[in-house]
Amino acid sequence: MRAVERFTENPLICPEAVRPSRPDLEVTRVFNCGATLYKGRTVLLMRVAERPIPEKGYMSTAYLDPRQPGGYATLRVRLDDPDLDLADPRGVFFYKGVPYLYVVSHLRLATSDDGRRFTVEDRPAMLPEFDYEVYGVEDPRIVFLNGWYYINYSAIAPTGVTTALARTADFKTYEKLGIIFAPDNKDIGIFPEKVGGSYVCFHRPSMKQIGAPSMWLAFSDNLLDWGRHRFVIGPRPGLWDSERVGCGAHPIKTPRGWLEIYHGADANIRYCCGAVLTDLERPWIPLARGDDPILFPHASYEMEGFLPNVIFHNGLVQRPDGSVDLYYGAADTTVCGARLDVGAVLDGLRPVKA
Image (cartoon, rainbow, N blue to C red; front, side):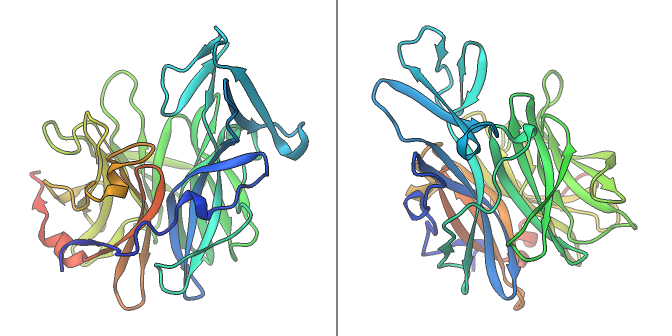
């Protein structure tokens, strides 16, 4: 077996399989899911991107506004309006100098008995509801700790991108615990157990002046307040992860160290998955790292879509038989999966020079 093998059933979930949250919206993309096991079943918590049904000659989007019926307001602007700026067609537009997203995202649950054929719930699991979530909730990651499934997710608002934390015991009701990392910080992966008596996470602050988007590590006594930050790894010039790196899902504990499947991108915005091994007791110290990606855009559903040539993984399931499955967004459009051979991945890493 190769280090990673895509599921033959890919893509597992497409936008047309997801019911819109409101009749005046349409689902354009479903991707970037957190994953876990719950009562023996595979659970995905997926990012679902929606927009108002298109109208010729107009640009429209939705955003959180509790004062409006249904909790959303709709911005509708003529395409020839001189105050409309569509300079970045992939994610953000401006109207009268104010930034808006093309879509608003919520989190939706999907479940499966075999990890490959999923049933998608008709209603959202988590919707935007606070001022730091005005433009949506995105890219969840799930870890089981102390009898709870903790979910960290990106919360998007005009004030910036934060990381917030929620938890659930049953995937029916969710308790939001608030912001845990201020703007702009994403890609948080909370470890599945304490290290040295503390909770630990990888995180990825965004650099504005000096440095490049890199993986850092932080500690906490309560999962809410994080500190004692340490640098872990950064981009590598000339390689597949030359522009940015960020955490995938939580790391896998192995006898050799913590194995993290992370994402990296180059100057062409080509996103791949790679692997790094860090020390068990000092997890900010990288022990080994792969020169090549273990999963890169190759299939048509990864090379074609809203954002071509993108594989973004933030879901991981460790099964009772020892197998490990990755769940990822393909081209920012669909949900896909792959089987991971942990031993093969470890054997493909090269020691990091101290």
